Length: 336
Length: 256
Image (cartoon, rainbow over all chains, first blue to last red; front, side):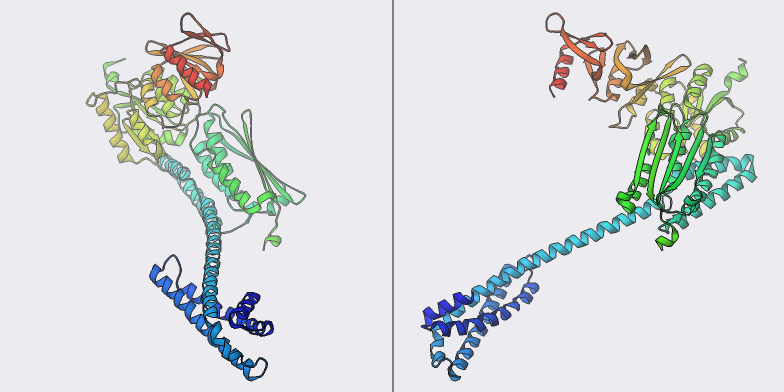
């Protein structure tokens, strides 16, 4: 740019190479600063929201003003060089470069306007991307919160129906079931706000849930626990296992005339907690519509929180349905 | 049967939860005109009890072991008044499509139950016309769209057989019945071949003849049979006639 300006000045104003270089260096530097001002006019007139006449007027006026400033600067620089004796008579030759400076000034200004618009567009798209990412992170968080707080409404309707039946035949039992149901609901509400709870707490939630289901299904529902002592203190996302046990009842036990045994095992090994929930089911049972939703939720929550560090497998073998999951065994000290 | 007993409405309660049966029983206590002749805890028991006892009124849960409520209804005909009792409101439309008298949601209110019972009595005393179609037709019509059968319940006397559609070889129309040829034996079911065809996944089952639907996985080859007609030979050796329309459908499928 400097070389081009120097060459053109030498040609049009008959300057020597030394004179033209001396002039063009500071002039280019100065004009670069002037063009920075175009940034503000670009910001003030976004290209997609400004009417065309105003848009053109703004930038043409900007270009002319910037060039005028440039010319004035060039003239005073010429005078300085002339009066200090570096290049005598330079100021008298200055008017000859005015058209050149005007033309180049306008062009350069418009070029920089162009550049700024590209810059603004890039910036906007980056901002949009960040916003999008923030929004999706928020959405996922909200979804997880919703998943956590989810209690199957049909569980409630069926339980209320059982209470209603007991109210007539066995009032003390009805009262007991109300209390058990209240206990379970209060726990799920309280836990929904926490990010982690100990496996021990999760297990007492499951026991509260099964206590209600046991009144509904009677001797058909049974739980066998096989949990390491050290596993009880491991932190897990709240309501991680409850949906699995609920599934085991709704899709397994409820379809079996004689019911069955739900086995829940939890073991700690090499800093990892592995959990198995196993239940019998009827492979020929009528299809149920909600099947799989609960499992998918648990899988998503594990993946969202632990990513590659977690594992989630579902296996069906004969009439046995088994969910195996593994996650890092974090203790309370480590998570706070 | 005495003259007095014949006036009674004979009811069967079907629900897998004892407490759910209990509350229905309790609501029926003041109604001496209704006699509970059986209580069933699963679909098989229900079909057996209903075909043996021929009740007038059925209080039917939908989700239970062995057979769901709709499958039970499909097998027992529609000469009786049915009141569905369930915690799910999502089956209501389907229930009325199979001409249920009413659809009660758990927990069941006493007033709501009375209203349902009154409607059932109206239906039984002939104030409302009975459904003209067999129950299996209605059940097929009420099937949610885009969900094809994965099993077909069949009743033989008081016994119920479940035929997974994957084990089916072919279906043959026989008057008002269809014969389902699966591994081992043939089962008869009261249903038209057209309604069964509509309920089967068209990417797996094809109507190759006015009287035949074939499981495409079981077809081993096609052989010409006389002048421009064919027979399909199945993996179990069965030979089925293929009509001209059936042949072009089969071709279109094989060319895909």
